[in-house]
Image (cartoon, rainbow, N blue to C red; front, side):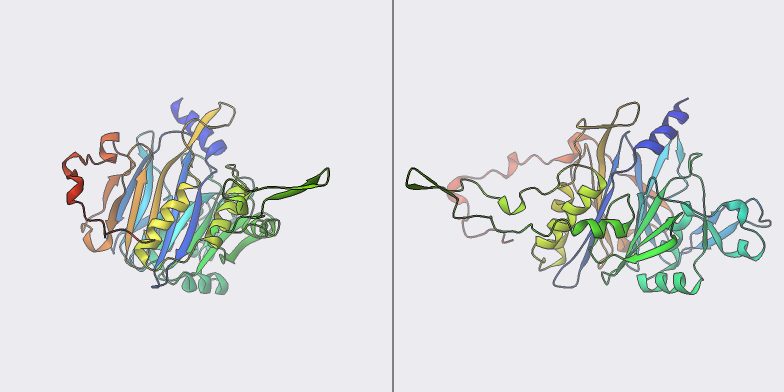
Length: 381
């Protein structure tokens, strides 16, 4: 019974994820991704060494040995556990070559090949869509390589796989350490399509080109306050000016709800207005703050027939240039990190969520007399 409830929730509610990309002046490429869900996620970051072998099921009309592929690189990816069982697909990941992939919900549009339609020689290069995330991390060291295989037909045919007995509707955002990115989508109307992700934002449905068209409705946002001179009017021969008493009017009317189109517009706008970070470290900090702008606190969004509460379960920030993954959860708000240069030689995992007490550091022992505090040190943004 619990498993059927999970399946219904997956089909109805997993539709609020977001990913953004920031490039710093020193060439660093940093990618932030959030996971919004309506039930507590038992999520782990899983590290795999190069040489790890993956196995995929065969379509029903294909016979012989299961399809396998092997990691060319070390990888760090996000896996979830439902009903005491690992999911078949990753939610997010990065490899040591600097390729990132995010798998985001694409409800109402995603459609893949019917597995029954694959037979003969087509069986030799076909994968369920639930394995595409792991496959890209295993095989590719650049977006250009992915695009080349897509263009020349060497990329696997993608058939509708299952995870927890459903066909999850998903699309893929792929970014590498040069900053290049593509959105890979499979739809009934368009078939297999990939689009250069020039905006550096991906959310959910509708398809990526629709989101770009929708951005044309929002050209008016700016950093500076509008009408700084205030509101001027006349009455009985006298002129009055009501000066502004607050700031932020340059972004007056920016979408702030949690729908996919609104989150895309808000993220794209904030990215376009934010100053380019000088360093990769500054880019990491900036990305965390951008992701916080889309954070869903527990209890303010309910969805589905059972009014399940949606929330931001975790955020990962991937430093593609230096090979590190930073992450924080919902209850444990501390930022933690995994880096490729310090991973074990066997497949290993760490749970993302922690306890509340792990999310802060008591600074009572850092208190010093005011007269002893140096006043010439500060952090410049």
